[in-house]
Image (tube, rainbow, N blue to C red; front, side, top):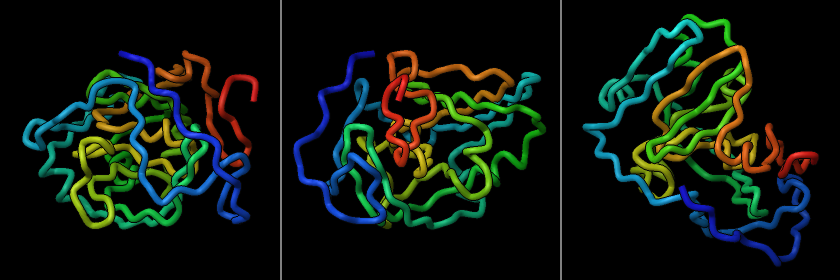
Length: 199
């Protein structure tokens, strides 16, 4: 997996209560990826949750679409300092999916088609905080933004919202993912500017 391109910087800060410190607003939707863009036909797509006991629950694309969906409007904050406010999505809440598995785990390691991984406390995927999103602004989610489906965890920096989501592995130990092992902060709260280890 290659290293991401340098990012964005150099724009003035806008005084907005929805803008975390160190961020600037953009109207664009920049594309940053750590490697080539996977192209997964929905007919071949699946999402699976593997519990700490090794039990695996899988959903096909039609099964995902058949679940109750939500249409969250959320702000996005990238660690490269751009923020995009009021973005509209459609997807299935992780509350719905995790209700179908028996787990006492504390952590999740998200993995994506293409090999990307990122870690999150399981609590950050519950209580209406996270979705498997498959539509953006009323349209099918484009591959460069993680289509056909991506993880959406808007209260954390965007690298935690894994594009091309493939699954979650649940466990009692916190296992850092791709960027976390490369020096990014383990949690990634944009309001605390948790960009890199030690922040």
